[in-house]
Length: 413
Ligand code: AMP
View (cartoon, rainbow, N blue to C red):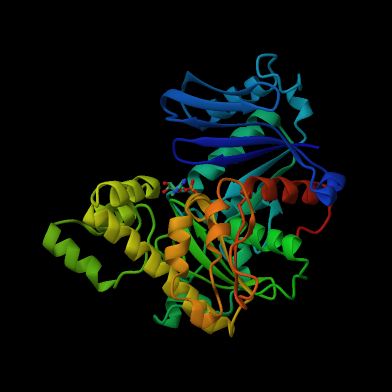
């Protein structure tokens, strides 16, 4: 089955065309036929494209809005130029959409119909920065491809198993009842995928899976997975809470919001923007949100604030590992993923430094070689708490959930 996976943002559309079905899923033999990224939608958009047969290239095109981007992608996928090998949009059999927020209603992926679309619209206020664009993508597909099966795969769904003790904030309970203010958690598709791959790599059953997963990219989150289910996670009501991220502060004392507002003459929206867009690695270093660049600045130019940003980043991750080990009563492994988690032996070593008390001893050689798309264990054989690097693949999981739903098979894995 040819499944188009879409991840629609405010000015970007990320897509991937995958060939997958139950047999390919069983054999882990799903294939990516084409993928790409459309950026700067609203003007002269930049397109980064790749196909299995022709490799990668870049081009530009005038693209007005999300619907325009999606029709461009569909035209390109079916053109001779792309070399994908499909000639009609009818060859695309289903679409899987990444949707940021499923609220309390959607505990798993779902096929989109009018009722679901309406329920998603009701949830826009929970993620006003993302949901309108996710929904615009779904509507644009409907416009272009008619009644094609469309799935919604939620960033929050994997965390629907959080117990009340993890998801409730200690604010008046009535606020939860009235406005559903609670921890939802995000990056769920990534944490779920890493837990699934971990089981494949170790031969453990779902029930035996006790893990701390660390998604460290431009956005960062940690997840405590007990018996295969998410039991706590660091992102909260929004993705702002928890770890230090590229431009997000993560945990701060909420009283600081008013203080910043008074001192800096900003309204609440301005302060929130500061915590989302000007904080984290960028805020501390004053240089960049890009970890690779910070590592270069710290190592080659001894930049003090670049070093400080890296140190605070790593310390916060370590603190969460400790908290989750205590909350879960121990775990079997810590698993790194995301751009930083998959590619930076230096950050991984700094995060795990001093975790010998928990039985985790880093295998320095294995850590050094585990970069790019490699997965493997990076702790010594004697470690009672293992460390793994497991590259994430959210698109694959979205495509597989879509296939399963179209075929009426359970998406639980
Ligand atoms: P993501 O959001 O998952 O694409 O991750 C982006 C982050 O990964 C950026 O901060 C990059 O600097 C970081 N990253 C990518 N490659 C490396 C690398 N080789 N070493 C350190 N950080 C990296």
